[in-house]
Length: 264
Image 1: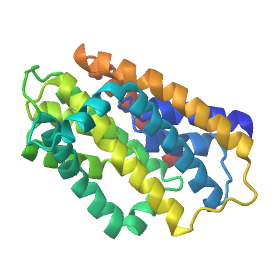
Image 2: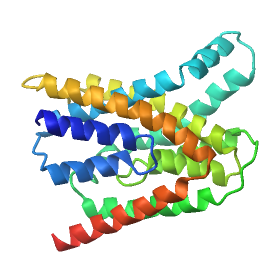
Image 3: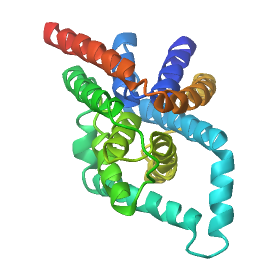
C-alpha cells in the first residue's frame, strides 16, 4: 500500500467513523476502487491502526466528558457519572457476544462484497431518514435504551451499516435527546475499539514484519485529523436535524455499489 492510498483510506476512515455513512462499507469500497492487494496481515494491521486513530480523536473531542465521568465514578457513589458508565457497559454486551462467537462468520462478509455493502447502505439511509423526522426531547438514555442501542451497534458490524448512524438513529427513535444520543453513540464505541485492538494484537494474527511504517503513520495521522473534524461536525448536524442529507448520500452510494457489483 503506497502513501497516497494510505492518506485516502485514512481520511475515509476518519470521516466515516463518525459521519453516518458506514466506515466499514466505505473502506471496502475504497479498497475495491484503489485495487488494494494487501495480504490479510497487512490489511488487518492497517485497519487496526486507523481504528486506533479514530478512537483517539474521540477521546480528544470528549476529553472533558471522559475526565468528568472518571472523576464522578471515583467517588464510588451511584451518581449520574457511574450510571452512565454502567449504561456504556450494557451497550457493549451485544457487540461483545457477536465478536466472540460469530467473528469468523462476520469476517466472511468482508473482502469486497460490494453488493452487501450497497444493500446495507440503503438500510442505513432508511434509518437516518426516519430518525431525522423524530421530534427532539430532553430524555436521557435509559438502561433498556442502552441495550437496544447496543443491539444496533452489533448489527452495524455488518459492512455498509453505519455504526454512528444506527446507534444515533435507534436512540433518537427511542425518544432520546439528539445531542445526548450522539454523545452516547461516540463514547460507547471507545472501549470496544480498544478491546478489539487488544484482541487482534494478542491473537498473533498481526504481523509486524515487512510493514510500510511510513504508510501506516501517514494513514494514522490522516484518520486522526479527519476524525477530529467529523466528530465535531456530526454533533452539530445531529442537533440541527440534518441527517436526511446523509440518507440521500447513502442511498446514492448504495445504488451505485449495487449496480457496480451486478455489472461485474
